[in-house]
Image (cartoon, rainbow, N blue to C red; front, side, top):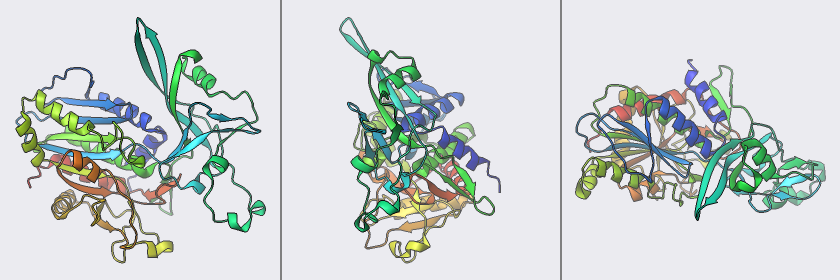
Length: 433
């Protein structure tokens, strides 16, 4: 087995503790591939054959590649860069006690017990603020202390009451990371030392506690991987590699190729940089304006577009067989999973599924199907949220994984190759509905 893509994936995850780092790292990779960065607060000038990207809030990024000739629509893939974790509270971020503990709150649907007894780090962004002549200026600095700073120790079973054995941990009381016995522990001072910004110039921060366990291979033939943040950095990486490969190759696709990484999926996407924002809509409309396409032309092009929403899927776990559908039980290392839901928590329908199945067949990639147990509501993802803002034909897919939302998740080492091949084929193909 050629595991080079799986190794690159684990390296990417290790360098991406937060959504801010996802955007920073992807931006650097895009620039290395000849993409030009655009700013939302400036006028855009686009050219045929051009490659561009734009960020919002430093935590979401949309990149696109314009063909040389006339274009008909948009070929879009979307995934998310955030993962369940703990966010450091501003204004009283340290709880004074012995030992000192950080005051945090849960971000997303984290499996709380999986965070006990692990090496934890601190990363995110710091906002430096200044004012001059009545103008307030902010500057964002991405930061990662790159050190095992904290642990959340679990309580020994000897000290638990019977009623506590299966109870969900109390986040405010039991899930605060231990920082040590240093009563002078000061987050602002640490940030100032790390960034070189004066303490009085630090306006605020968006900092997250993250699992510093290293991603690794496991299994007799190294056929599996275990890592933090597989949901959804695995799909971010796989769709991005397929996108870049298609942009750099000669293609027949008449569409503008678009790659999106959104923030805040784990908390509902209802932010100005989430999938429920106007970010994608704004970018597509501005492309049309630059290409002298009027409003009617914009809607015509949307009708000829296609969206692949890529967010990991649940692999079958035989220990919990009753939680799954009786037939559709995805396996790891068996290819991308097409996700269906009658309540439209997944946006897949007969048309979009047929298109993606054909793309996989043309790419020589296996595919499989996920549907929820009919008595379990299940989760949702980006597809239906994005399609409500940008109404294009859409399919929800993902790679099968175990232990979704755990601090460590497991998946198949071969599946990342399948996703890259499928996405390159998608971006290289003209989809005509």
